[in-house]
Image (cartoon, rainbow, N blue to C red; front, side, top):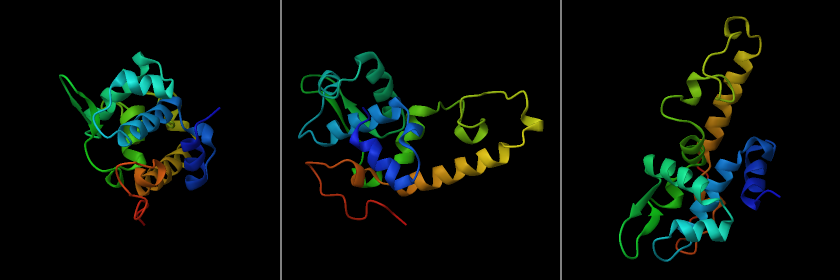
Length: 164
């Protein structure tokens, strides 16, 4: 069963929820836990509360940290916290952080972004359609702020969550 966050995304973007990978869903669920914690959130707590495999969560948290979406604190009382308010984090930032590496940006690769070299690229009749769909999806995701998707106990950010 998919998480309710994915259902909300599907309705906002008018696309089937199956387009969101488990990795993106887990990233959003982890961010929800971090946003709702009154202090830093431990990786083990996120994994337990959201039923996410720890090794998979580590990869996701590292990707989010690399893109300055979260920060980590070391030592006693350490853990993860948001690097900026939910109202300033877009769905696109999260999606691109966990789905695509710095070496393979979405715009440079074949849809959905997983093929490095396409052997039929020069004769691909649907490439232009995929490119336009990708651009439209990116534009839509850049308008959606996490403040509207992830209710936060720390902040009331639903206002102005979707920028037009």
